[in-house]
Amino acid sequence: LGGSAALHLASFAISKEFKPIDGVIVENSFTSIDDVVDVHFSMLKNFKFLLTENWDSMKSVSTIGNAVDEATMRGDVISPKLLFVSGRKDEIVPPKMMDNLYDEAKVHNLKATLIKFENGDHNMTWLENEYFSRLCAWINNN
Image (cartoon, rainbow, N blue to C red; front, side):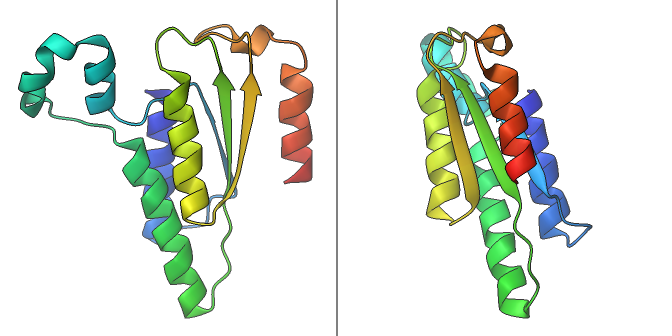
């Protein structure tokens, strides 16, 4: 839930006009719990109405984008940067979900970057070559 919680917190802070969030790094995260159910528990899809929390990361990204637009219309400048880190061999969260989150950020003209690690899986992407150097480069340049 880490990536989804981070996006939710950022969307809440930005939309409520708290101190702006400068950046969020999300790694191997899902678009929503609903979508995870569809992928891993398709036999339960008719029972998704029982979910009490959906952790809709797509909505969180959209909320961030809308809040940035509203701030711009007021004359405020906020520009949170989003880094999406994707292990392309993730066996738990399909990498397409990370692509979708990145695409949603771009639809809202957010400053978003997608870094792909072709051999990274869900829990070991951080062991990939150049992982730390690429993240550090993003942090230093943003």
